[in-house]
Amino acid sequence: MTTSDCGERTLKISRHSLRHLRAFLAVVETGSVTKAADLCFVSQPAVTQALGKIEHTAGLPLFSRTPQRIFANQAGEILARRLTRAFAFLDPALAELSPRLRVTTTTAQLTSLVAVREAESFTLAASRLGLSQPAVYRAVSQLEQEAGRPLFDRTAQGIVPTRAADLLAQAARLAFVELEHADADLAELTAAEIGEIVVGATPLAKSFVLPRSIGVFRRYRPNLPIRIKEGPYPDLLTALRRGEIDFMVGALREPAPIADVEQRTLFFDTVVLVCGTRHPLAGRAGVTMEDLATFPWVVSPAGTPIRGYFDSLFQTAGISAPRSFVETGSLILMRELLDGSDHLGCTSRLQAEAEIARGLMRALPIDLAHTSRPIGVTLRRDWLPTRAQQQFLDLLPNAANLVAEEPYNQNLWAAQPI
Image 1 (cartoon, one colour):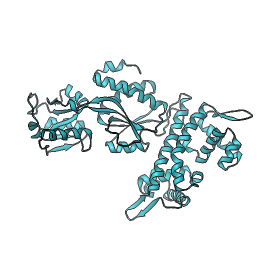
Image 2: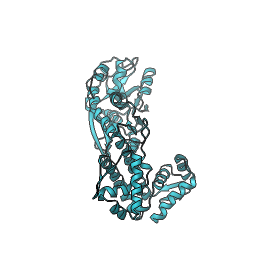
Image 3: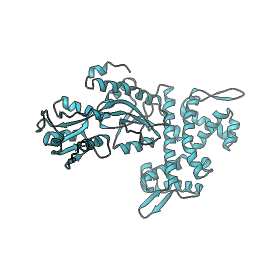
Image 4: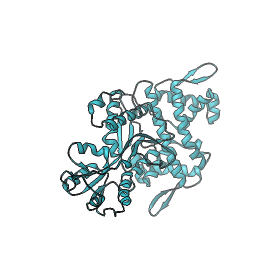
């Protein structure tokens, strides 16, 4: 979730230096400015100044003060929780490079590292950050000097990140996400909206579950931006693990592709074989696998669950799979090809239902009940959602139930409470 402005309220906890944020945590943990200063190897006035700047950014008092001790109030505890998570991601990666980096590393250095890692070019990274190339180069070089090792290999083909750079960049990304979530958490205390919800979605999710969930969510949070990110499953999974999207909605993988993600089933879908309304097989009752093998097909890309089911149909029947096919994840392209040619299609039943109901394509009489597959939410196991993100997640099961029961009854959906 990337921080953006909603209304007049704007927080930027991530703008503070890492030293200030560490000093804040030290005060929360020790209840004393003096002890925090000793732990952070800075002066007591420096800690006091850091607290003042952070409270000014938050627009809220973060501590309750007594003669004996300083206590974090509700806002302070909320911020401390996010900072603790941020440094839990960041500090192990810093320590692996050099113990000094925990003290010396700056936000600017980490931001430059992440940008260079993603662009694999100092020039492109500088352009994306709106900085000069020497400034970005200097920031990364300072990290390398403190670490005592290179973070990028300069080759004839370009800049190649080392394993250490990969690990630190990933840790920095996740730490920055926590700082952005801190803005959203603090804004909730004043009924303000900050941030956005970023969802990785498959075509099926975009057709049914997300529109219904967004419709209800908008009644309660009319201004919070929602961004839907599309792409192949591997790309969305990478973006999820990097903190670039908050969660994914679509077909689940069995088993989960990697241990650091969690999958939650919402409902089940099956595969359907379809044809155009003027296709030679349209309306025929006795369609065989041999019949199907003689026509060209529109199918999902290799590696997707639906494609796996399609390939297994012909393997199970002992028939060679069709050689003529078009690979696409677009139902629109499938529909147009079916309408203007003798292509057949293999797709999600729920996704095709609307086209079938409108008379734009027809389902072939092939029993594919065995292709039932789970549709649901995928998220990082260590993810802590903001209140807005949790509200959106809570809506998904209701939307899924309506999809499974009566996907096109808009009146039924509108009557549902949040």
